Image (cartoon, rainbow, N blue to C red; front, side, top):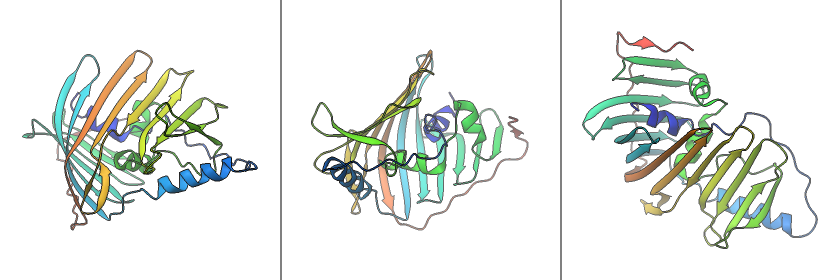
Amino acid sequence: MKFKFILVISALGFLITSCGAKKSALKSGGEEAVLENVIARHRETAPDFKTLYARLRGTYDDGYDKQSIVVSLRMQKDDTIWLSAKLLGLIPLAKALITPTRVKYYDKINHVYFDGDFRLLSHWLGTDLNFEKVQNLLTGQAMDDLNGKDFVLKTSARGDYKVSGKNTGSLKEDFLIDKDNFRLTGQQLTRKLQKQSVTITYPVYGEQDGVVFPQKIDIRINQKDENIKINIDYRSLEFDRPASFPFKIPSGYKEIDL
């Protein structure tokens, strides 16, 4: 598995295409107003911070390979995501540096590196992604922009809000939002024709330094004959301390050639 755990986390936007959002005509009556209010209230739950230092434990299981690693995460909101992975919390595995325009990483086990745009992650997982989608996934926000698209408001089995995209294209999107606090409890993106889906749930939120943030993220990826389970547990969170993002590709490593 090596660095694949970090790469999968970074590339979980694989079901979102880069096509422009469709503008939807406003419906008459109160249903559209309720939908707009739910979306606006959810956006207000975005954690308010400038920098984040976090330590998380992740488990990865694809049915063949199962491992647990410790990841140090640093983030400057809307600017930089830095990850450093260690096996058993001791053995360095890899580092990644992700910005809105660039992806850099190196793998200490296989002695390879990449320094370029998002083509590598998009190549591995079959479609486009961007920085914002990765950041939203890690911070408990909808991976797609819910404004200006053709969504309808439904009710989930447990009575929460379910914001669903009309099934008019190849991509089906569903976002579950808690009816009491408007925080995201789950999101599912499905491409039926390609037999691809990703389901992301946020079972627990907690508060640290006045910031409400996910404590657990459970991810299920299904694509054709591959089923991947990823569980992320945030073990520590610290906000708005001075951030640094040390990153240097070691000499002698081989560049990945797309």
